[in-house]
Length: 112
Image (cartoon, rainbow, N blue to C red; front, side, top):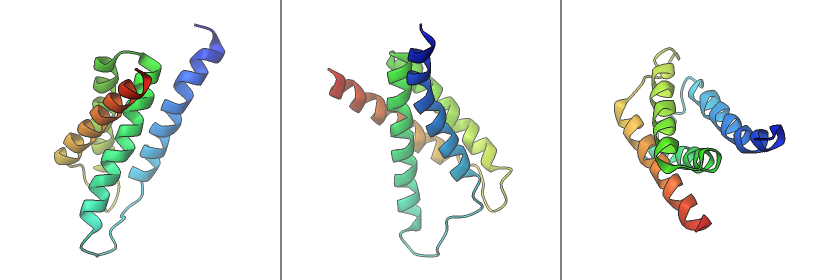
């Protein structure tokens, strides 16, 4: 694979993963409002759907794209254990996995 092709496929994945990591490093997004939790869960779903689509674009195979996305989600939740004011949550990994799947499915349908 030519270097420019490799960069065009993987730079979006790396940039998006870096954004997720940066957001996970923020101590707290809690405003105390009742809609905080549903909004954060929707954000998880959305950010991982974008990651899933970009992984499928780079890997070209849905299974590996989903597995890499879920592995990143699990590592991100582990990372949050070390961020003051945050904690890792297995439910968030499940929501992220669903988001990755959504991104993979939507990308495949749009590319078909």
